[in-house]
Length: 560
Image (spheres, one colour):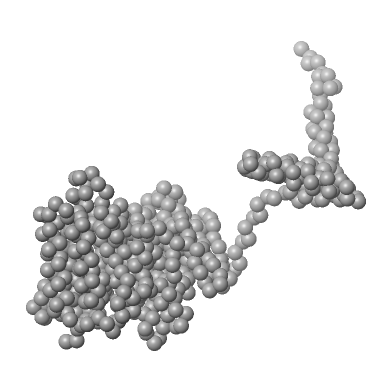
């Protein structure tokens, strides 16, 4: 049977439809080009209206009336001004055209030849660590493409890498500290020495972000920090490490710098601090800074094992109970501190049992600051005395409940001389000066997420409070004001923070034997009366005043 021919409209309809679509597309493109300014202005007006609605919603209700009055006044001025409406319309159209422009993301600039060479070298160096022979489609291979492994990168003005995002295969053992340390050391070496790098491992996404850290400010002098009672500023760190800033004075200027704040007191989880560093790294500077901050709300007992007189500026000051440099005075002061801790515990317990608040005399914080106690331990052993560190057992164990805080500063070569009680109860740690990553991890309990630098200024190191993260730290400049090498600016800053003198420095008689006996007998009397007497609180207040005067008189060490 012969087939009938298809109707004409069906035989060539597809060609006509295609031609019609092309004509319609051309007309639409032409209309878009012609109407592009109108489309841009319309889009800008819509964005301006949305911004106005958001501003109106964010404005408090008590300020909406004045805002409406201000807008009405502006409209009235524009309406009455010559050519005002026309100029306002032109300004509105210009603002709408600016807001409605296409703001598509620009493609990142491709690296130049030297930058590409650097990225290629880094990629080839990572191949032995991020590849295996069993991988059917390796991300890292010799001669492979580095673009997929490094999706994001930035360079500084010198052409070196400042930020790099690295992708690595899922089978890499990123949960092992040794594997991560190898990669971090390699990146530090290949990306440029002399800088500090921060490493952020994303184990879930198999990505590593390498960021170059800027130097911490070293020109921060000692000053009154805006902190609450029980908060001590150890130093300053990177903005990404903490969520708080402090306003600091730089002459006539002010800056907001992120601090490392150590919280002490009854509710503190890390009531005691251990500071370790090399000679000249700033450990004494940090202890002196802590002493100046502690004297605002508490009393201080200082035991200096180095015998260099670094704390002479605090002798005889209000709140400074003793500044000891010898084994005899150190033992006497720490014995008193032990009995004072026990007295505070007994008084607080008795007040709780009777349903009364804690007495005021046990609420004032007591700080025990020990600088190089291992040196005093050797001297005490040579003289046949007990080690002063053995008297820290009670303040360290019960210091949080008694509002007693212990700070111990020691050098690396004296760590073996620290007692087990000091190692166990000082969970807040600070390491100053250059140190190997293994030693940092041993002291802090966790390795830092940055590469330690070899050449660091005094007061530069790391801090870790309990089980928290490891922070970079720069201690504020708090030198000895009596040192001839101290600048006038820093000397004046420290002198302004010192409290007034309770007794003149030359009026304190160096009668060590009587003072030690008075402190020991008074402290033992405090403990005995606190246990047996009914009116314990009034007696202990008076006894503490006697002991405080005895310790203040002990401040000047006797000759010989």
